[in-house]
Image 1: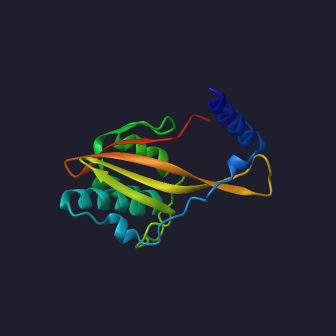
Image 2 (image 1 turned 90 degrees about the vertical axis):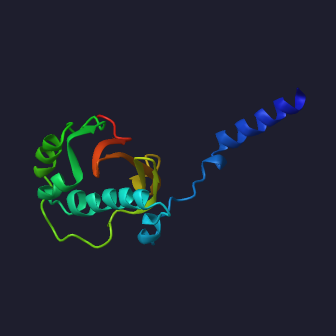
Length: 162
């Protein structure tokens, strides 16, 4: 019992002092092709579908390609984006202007994982440090997609209402 108390006390002091808050920065992967690879051709195709959607529609601003990637009945779980392909296109058309489509995603991708009909993409997200406005810190952002009949049918992320 005494050892447990000492461990809890030591841990509390460590957290209170800030020593446990030291962060290892989140790092993007430089090799996107490696992230897209899979021994299972279906999983590789699902990863590529999501990756190309990001490059062409999301980053490239080409809403005319949304039909190629999104099911018409696309379900959106982000509370700031409407459900349905038409709702997605209407919202993003307001501020996404078409630009050159890059061969590689510009967003700092950490990983792309596929299992069954789901694809999860994680990104580096950088924020201003609220404790010190002269500093920044990194964390991760996650998007998960459900693929159905070769199109993105559903999307989840960590977005919150502002």
